[in-house]
Amino acid sequence: MSFAEFYGPTTDENSLAILDAAREAGVSHIDTSNVYGMGRSETAIGTWLQANPGAREGLHIATKAAITKDADGNRCYDNSLEHLEAELDRSLARMGTDYVDLFYIHRREAERPIEEAAEALAALVKKGKTRAIGFSEIAPASLRRAHAVYPVAAVQSEYSLSTRAPELGLVQACADLGTALVAFSPVGRSFLTDDPISHAAAMEPGFLKVNPRFLHPNYDANIAATDRFRALAAEMGWPAASLAIAWLLHQGDHVLPIPGTRSVAHFRELVRGAEIALTESDLARIEAVLPVGWAHGDRYSTGQWVGPERYC
Image 1 (tube, rainbow, N blue to C red):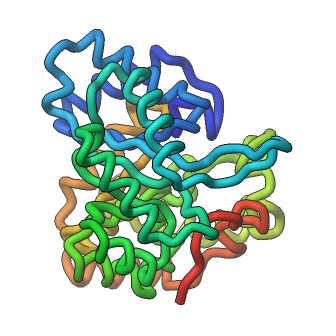
Image 2 (image 1 turned 180 degrees about the vertical axis):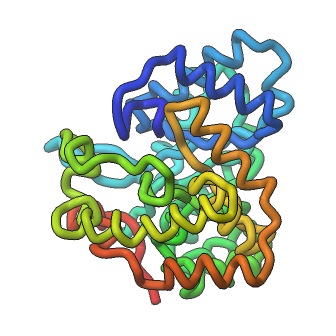
C-alpha cells in the first residue's frame, strides 16, 4: 500500500529498491491489492519481477479485490465470481504472472452470503489463477462459515500493540482452523516507531486526516503513550519498529505481520524484529508500558468502518 503513496509521496524506483532489499533479506511474502494506487502497487511488483528473471518462483504473492464503485460513483463491494475473476485477471496482467499464491476478498459484501463468496474464490483456485484463498477484515464467525465451504488460508486484519481487537476471537479462530492471521499496520501506522508521522503530515489529504487516532487531542495522547514504548525499545537496544514486530511474532506461529514502508532503512528495522527472541519478562514489560486499551480514539472513522466486520 505504501508503494501507492497511501501515507505520502514515493517513487517507483524507491519501491523497486525495497523489493530488492526484501529479496536480499529473505522476505518472500508480498501482499498487495488491485486498489492500491488503482494498480500502481501491482505494476511496480510486475516491473520488478520482469527485471529479476526467476524471482517469481521464490515469492509468495498475495493480492485482493472486491472494492469497487456503483453507478453513482459511490464505494461498494462486489464478491461475485464475475467481478473477482475480472479483477484478478487484471492484477495478473499488471504483475506479469499466471497466478497468485493467495487471493483475498478485500471487503465482504454484506448482502451476499459468505459461503457464496468462498465458493467464488474456490472456483478461482480450480481455474489455477490462485493457489489459496483469504478474506480481509472479517469476523471469527464469518471465517468459520467460509472455512466450512473451502479452506481459508489467511485472514488479513489490523493487529498490533495499538489494535488488540483480533484477540477477542480472531487470533483463536485462525489458530483452530490452521489459518494464517496476516496482521496489517503492525507498527500502528507509525505510532510504534521511532519516527511517528507528524500531526501536520497526518492532516494532509488522505486516510489519516479523518482517522480518530490522528486527530487532536487523541494524537498528542497517543504520542505521549508511545513515548514510553520508544524509551523501552531504546533501553532494550532495539528500534521501536523492530520491537513492535517482534511482539506480534510472539503472539502465535500463525501470525504474519505485513509492515509497509517507503524507506529501505525502515524496512531493515522492520525485518530486524524477526531476530528478537522475547522472554516472558520482556513481554510483560511491553504490556506494562502499552497495556490493552491504551490507544486514544477508534481505529477507524465512521466512514472507514463501512466494510470491515466488527465482532466481540
